Length: 243
Ligand SMILES: NC(=O)c1ccc[n+]([C@@H]2O[C@H](COP(=O)([O-])OP(=O)(O)OC[C@H]3O[C@@H](n4cnc5c(N)ncnc54)[C@H](OP(=O)(O)O)[C@@H]3O)[C@@H](O)[C@H]2O)c1
Image (cartoon, rainbow, N blue to C red; front, side):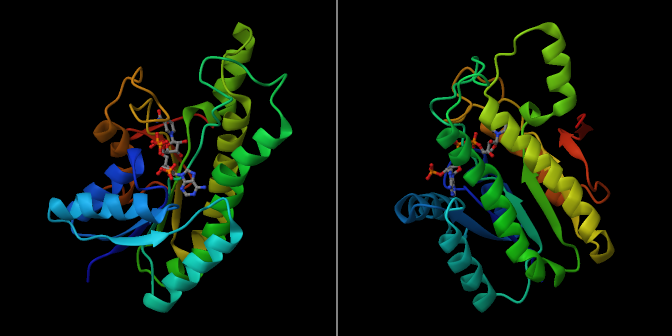
């Protein structure tokens, strides 16, 4: 039987590429998108390549949308093997290259955490029962090297850092969730890891980024398809990053 994966925020960027590669590998893939039109467009683009994927409408910043999406999955499926928590935002008022820690407005912090952290936690908690029914359950939380507290301490020692505070803090919180969740699910043999895709040429990463979207998806795809060992790790291209 083919394994089944859900990828959130998958109508474009790194998430879309993860769906493409997982579907090509023979997995049954559910493409999560918050906007139906954009989701359908992504599904039909893959269809042109001969890949059949299922659309799931899910806005991870809205608990009602998460609840509806999970109940749809529960009606349709008896288990889920892989959850890739990819959906994420870097608020437009927090560009890369400028520190926002002194001025970032609370609504921006809240909005960033709503998508990058609270929604991710809510969705994951609700999907754990379906994941527990898998024989090889795994969760990949798409984090960022900017969420590494160890590296933030190094940056801080060098002087003012030019990184966006709300985004970084939300990804540090995701990393904390990874560690706590991995511990909680160890007895159920569900592995949980954080992944840093690299600096990737997407709408978020901008054209100035160093990696192609294919390269950006690689860390996550490897964790899903090839890595049979890692648990409670923060990984970029097979290498461990400091927390
Ligand atoms: N690009 C980089 O250099 C980089 C580096 C490190 C980590 N990351 C992480 O990698 C992940 C993917 O980023 P990306 O570069 O591919 O960004 P992207 O091109 O901006 O794509 C983000 C995706 O997330 C979706 N999304 C945003 N808010 C959502 C919500 N509330 N509910 C559901 N989906 C939502 C977007 O949907 P819409 O199209 O509807 O907006 C889009 O599909 C993110 O978690 C990001 O933080 C990226």
